[in-house]
Amino acid sequence: MLFRQALVPVAVTGQAVVVDGGTDAGVMQLIGRARATGTSGFPLVGVAAENTVMLPGDGADPGDRAPLEGNHSHFVLVPGSSWGDESPWIARVATEIAGNAPSATVLINGGEIAFHDVAHSIEVGRPVLVVAGTGRTADKITAAFDGGDCTDERAARLAGSPLVTAISWVEDPATVRATLEELMRPGALCSAV
Image 1: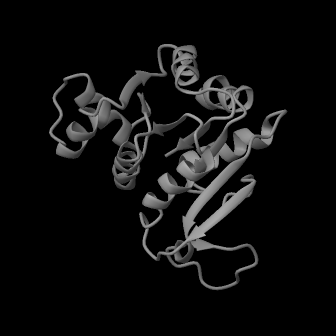
Image 2: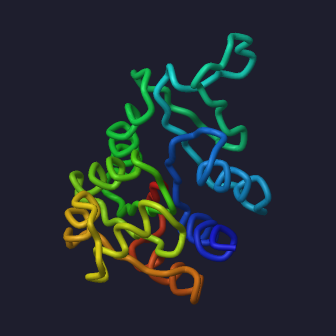
Image 3: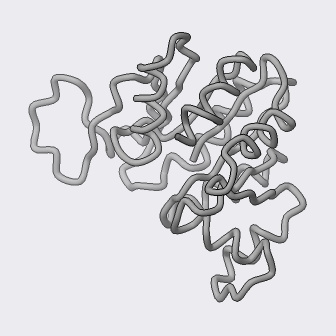
């Protein structure tokens, strides 16, 4: 529902490019599937560390590698063999694609690597919309943002940035959409982590 009612409409109407980690898991899988079922496909760029993903037709033992999500329109493979090596590259690719256009990062759920993704977005001056109620890293940052009991120093540090906004999708997905639309303008870029 969050993807259909908030994220995809903003990407389509704002003519945005969405950049994510590109694998067939989690939020990246969900945004890929949402793109595939939409009537208008927005550019969806997956940025992945080359030795963490399986390329189509790769018959080797997957080990810890993940398949690429097949509904992405483009992929950028970057140097690296560990999960998280792609984090600084996601921010760089998003910055290059955006150029002078406004851009924003949307954090939905997220694990340990999401802390790095958010930090890299803040480092390049990109606003971050944290979607509360989606779990894990997003909820930790939201707890710190709202002044709640947050024992995670990383979450508290990120939540203290003036570039971070936290909003709940549970109560009203339309509010998430409106907030994201406020951050985005036609031709802008949205980085999903």
